Each structure stands twice: as C-alpha cells, then as structure tokens.
Length: 227
Ligand code: GRF
Image 1 (cartoon, rainbow, N blue to C red):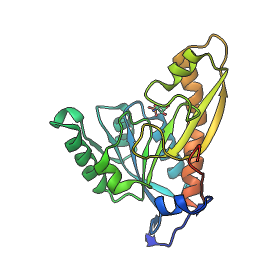
Image 2: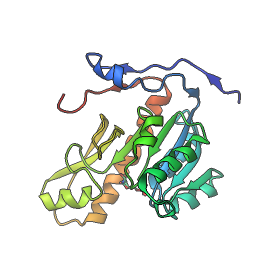
Image 3: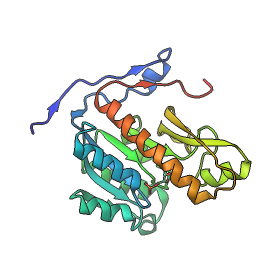
Image 4: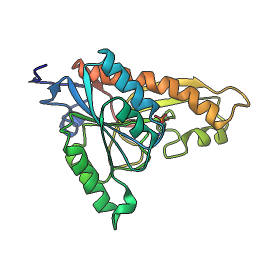
C-alpha cells in the first residue's frame, strides 16, 4: 500500500489555549504509524494490534517497546511486529534512559505513541520530541487515583465506582488532558486483580475506539480538568 501524507487536524473545544499548546497530529501519515510502549502482559497492546490487523482502526503498529522483559514483547514478536527494550538499569541516570527511549522510538517514525501499560514516567527528552502525540491509558477515573496503584487505591478509598481514562501525556503523573473515560462499578468484596481485569475490559475497548477516532481524523480534545 502506498502511504500518503495527508493534512490532519483535530478540533480543540477550548478558547484556543489548548490549540496553541496541543497542536496535535498535524501532518501524520495514513494509516497512522503507532509505537506502543508496555511493561506487562500487553493485553491492551494486543487489542490494538488485533484491531489494526482487522482494519477496525486505520493504523499500523510499527513497533512495541518495553522497559523490561515484558510478555508484551513476545506477543508482538509472534504478531511479526518489531520490538525494542530500553531498560533504566542499563543507564547511569534517568535522563540518559529517557533520551535513549526517545531515540529508540524515533527509529520507527511514529505518528502516535501509545503508553499501554507502560509503568514509567516519560521524561523531558521524550516529551520534547513527542508531547501532543502520546496517549496513556490509566485504570481509574482521573483525576482520581493517579499513579502506579490506581486500582488498589480506589479499593482502599472505599469508592463504589471506578473505571479507566485515556489521556494525552504531559510532564505530570497521569495529569494530561483526558480524552475519554469508562465507568466500572465495584462489586462488594472483589479483590484488586479481579477488579483490574474488569477495568481492563473497558480499557481495551476505550483504547481502540480512541485510536480509531484519531485515525479517522476527528477528535475533540477536552479542556484540561479544572480549567
Ligand atoms: C492497564 O490497566 C494499564 O492502564 C496499567 O497497566 C495495565 C496494563 O495491562 N498501567 P496489560 O499489561 O496491557 O494487560
């Protein structure tokens, strides 16, 4: 298939502030070139790979990267997708790791980077290159329960409802503008892993739908929460 460059613009439903700060996805390719980052089993990444393979999403997963020996890499290899690993322990400091990760991703010239269960905060070098083109999924209704233990924290707080969010990545921890959320009712007595698995069902669908909306060229970027 011949890839073509196409003008690609998204509507920013704000007073213009976000439009200036988030000039997202201009000049991208069709189908969208996706690099996925994962640290775990990769069920979110798998869902996106499958959706792209079925043509449900006009995107091509060009690589899957990880910060460790994640099962997601083996899954991607089985699907014939390039993989790379950039381990923080291989670098003397976090800044060098961040630069190496940005360079590893750049090899694949992505239109969009998707943090799909990637358990690291992306640093300044990565954001300099890709901010406005990085999505993250999170297993809570942001701004509630940011961070690495969102499901556990929701259970500990005794809430009756939680869910998942997909958002643009900025320099904070799960603080970027939220694009979409799905609600999940907590079943009394259920444990963290059981609840997390139910959240991930919603999370996978939300991720695929969001990337499909981006790939089809229409997405309204919401206001930053609280602005
Ligand atoms: C997801 O809930 C994601 O939001 C969180 O880790 C989980 C990844 O699941 N950060 P998987 O490895 O894709 O199954």
